Length: 477
Ligand code: ADP
Ligand code: MG
Ligand code: ZN
Image 1 (cartoon, helix red, strand yellow):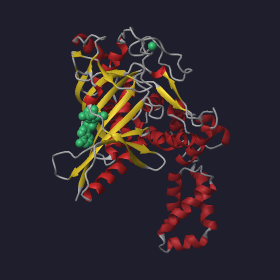
Image 2: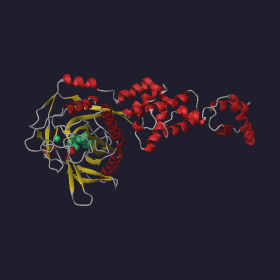
Image 3: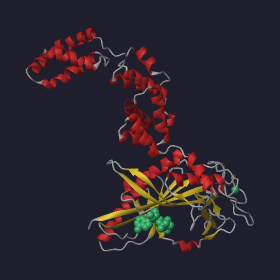
Image 4: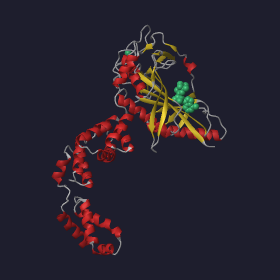
């Protein structure tokens, strides 16, 4: 039978506030264990939480950026469970009345299509602490610095239909969070986490199948791999007449498979109830309007502007807007040289290649936008050929020099002078009489050979267009 996967994702994003959600402790990452703690986030008896206004503002930003409805009244609830990283014995979260409902994001797929993925809800909650297990002794340590760090949870509708779509959705969410500057969105460091729910159903069937929930997915690649593996497992089980058990499964990064962790807990297992220490959160519409006004340009808008204003293909625009810093770099280049497609080609090609090779992000690029623009100016003016430009580019990556200086120092200026190129062309034809004869007798493919020889003879500096013209004249004329 032909089965179709159904996927819904729950994403936790850590918010970049200075202080925690219900106390004034710092959220800074990497401090010595248990130094950013106080009676509130340690869950001491008798203390009272006070909601951080910036957390609400950030949650509203995400809600508005994803077309959600911000609720006038929402509530915090206690989610009760026992675990050593949770000193209060409950997590303060939102349950029945979350801050935002029913939005969507658009995702773009490799094949050029776009899909709209529904967002069920966004709610605010506090993070738990961190357990550190001693690899050598049967001892675990607990660090409460993370306890009470603000999170938003973004729950998608079961609208995703493939691991690829899940990956695209996650990247889009992360891009939005970063454009809004409310979260680092770093999966490896845990500031962006994803639980993936997945089921399969016979194609054409309306009703969803039984799902499993996958955890321990701390990179985009793992999300996609784990989903693919789990989809295959479920298809095979159903094909053999077995039933899928609703459960939580872990992605085993060593064995490359999911393993059963525990039966799925239900909401009633957590005995949710409204937190009596926190009054309902009432958000005036004037505040929503104010936050809406502060929203920056978002990825979709920026893509549309790049296509309209710079006449870029959708593919290029999509690559360039994927991260705000990349798009900024692009626009900084354009400020110095107004050649959008040329800049885009160099960014997607050579620049990306050296950044990947050196493991650097665009903000750490060894070549600044101004310097790349300097190189592109030389190409555009015909001072250097594309081939020479690559040499100059590599040189720039290893030095502080600008393109013009390198070209002058190394004498790389493109030769367009017909007299000089004529001499080269004549020499090449004379030194290869056999090829010239064959060419004239009809082996037209040999033309490329002559172009190559002439370029080599000029050490890459001859203007290829002039070389072509003169060779044609000499060989055909
Ligand atoms: P819980 O809070 O118990 O994890 P939810 O109903 O909030 O459950 O759903 C969590 C996620 O699971 C949502 O993203 C939702 O889209 C997804 N989901 C629900 N049912 C299915 C299903 N049958 N197959 C795949 N995903 C599902
Ligand atoms: Mg869940
Ligand atoms: Zn605290």
